[in-house]
Length: 234
Image (cartoon, rainbow, N blue to C red; front, top):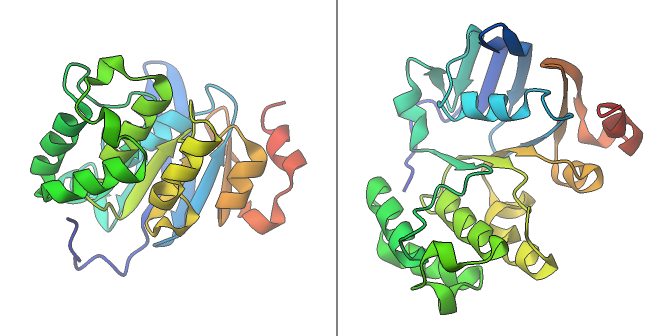
């Protein structure tokens, strides 16, 4: 489980002029924002706007090519090792071994973080996968796989959740089951990528809009309307 550190009084995320390129293609340009502990920023933008690149930088999986980035008090990439075990990442890849069962995947992930096996059992039951816990992930539906991936992302009680379309492939029952784990009341700070404008706004404290890698919108969620979000996709 995550433990308190000397940086706990610092913001969950602090970016200043962050940039990232893939060869000649610039994915992020001078992105700056601060996210408080326990707060949520919803990130909106069209495909190619830089949303996934942003999440991968925050997770310590990509190096920024410009600017400075701090996550949970750790400077990236130099101190990424200090933050990685305190972050929960849920991307398009469920990051589960397809030939292992749900239970085996979670127990393996739990051992990496020193988490007791009972935590995995509790989560599996909470998301309604107890009856399929001993089935290989490759036999699960997309919705069930997403629920298992959410269990993996929160297994170690992270202080920061990085969520890329977390409700993808989930029916209303599945979405309700995972809400206590990754929803607004879950507790950790969250960076939430969503194409569902109304839902994203309801979940957020702040809104970050990206267009062609630049910050096109940064405002409290209460001051952002659906038309503002939709304008990012125009």
